[in-house]
Structure formats: structure tokens, C-alpha cells
Image 1 (cartoon, rainbow, N blue to C red):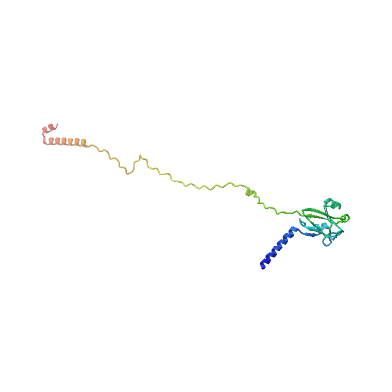
Image 2 (cartoon, helix red, strand yellow):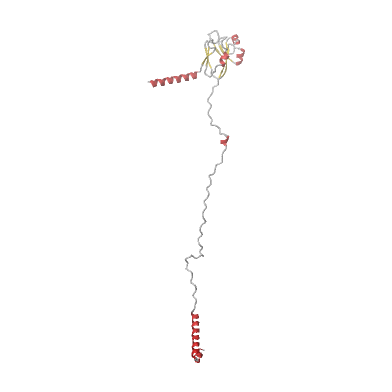
Length: 218
């Protein structure tokens, strides 16, 4: 129950603040003196001390039939012309709500009292909308486009030159070398043996002195 009461009070405060903001603020012109000829504070000085916004309300305190409030143009304000008012408030204790921003000119319905200073200028402030947040513009340094950085090239490893295979003309180391040609010594042996026999025969002939043997060989 306590939490529900707290929540209800919070909602009431929010609603009241919303209603107050939509209705605006109520200003009492002239304070306790009201709308009179000689107020304790000049009306324009009083207006300069306050800030007026759209939907704010002015309360003019006066008796019905004894005075009035006229909304006039700037020219009629300075000339105290009461014949062409934009709006007239004559019912006593009148309320006026600002429906726009800009200057508003008020004078009394009595031209003589207007010339004595019973008049008022109120400037209503313009409605300020929250500016839309825009993304920050890039700084000149960040606006400069940078060239893409190429990745570093890796050094190519050196490769050993391929080993050349031995030429077909070169014979392998374990190839069998051809055998040297054989010398034919048969005729040489025959000649030697012939000369040996002949020399042996001559020696025998000389030793024996037999001439016929020599002749036989001759």
C-alpha cells in the first residue's frame, strides 16, 4: 500500500507540472497596485525584469467600468491612440494569454492616463527547439586519405643449382675396360727356334769337324 501511494503521488506531481507548463505562468501586472495611473514601479521596468514565453498570462487588476486594457499597434502605443485597438479588455480583472512570440503593446482606454504612463510593452521570447545533433565534421587531418600500405615482401630463399646428371658419353666408373689386343708371337717363336737349331748345328759341325753336316744344312 505504501508503494502504491508513493507511485500515485509521483504521477500527480508529473501531471500537475505538465499542466502548468502547458498553461504557462501567470503574471500580475503592477503587483499589488494593479492596473493604475501611477504604479509604484513603472510598467516597462517591471516587464524588463521578467521573462515572458508563449502561453504565459497577464492579469490586469481593475474595476469594471472605471478602466480598460487595449491591445494596439506600435504606432498607436506611442501616440496613445485608443480608437483602433486590436483587442479590448473591458470586463475588469482581465486575463490575456500570449499566443505567439514577439512584442505586445498595451495601453489604457483613457487617452489622458496613457499619456501619463499607464501603458505597457511586453516582449515574448521565441520558442526554442532543441537543435538536432549532427555528427562532427571530420578534421582536415582525418579527411586526408592515406594510400594503402602494401604488405612487406618476404625475401625469396636461395635455391641450390640442380645437380647435372652425368652425360651419356661418359662411361661409368665401374665399366669394364676393353682388354688390350693380343700380340701374335707364333711366327716370332718359329724364327727364334729355327735360328737356335741352325746355330746349334753350326756349333756341332765346328766341334766335330764334319763338313758334310754343314753342307747338309747349307
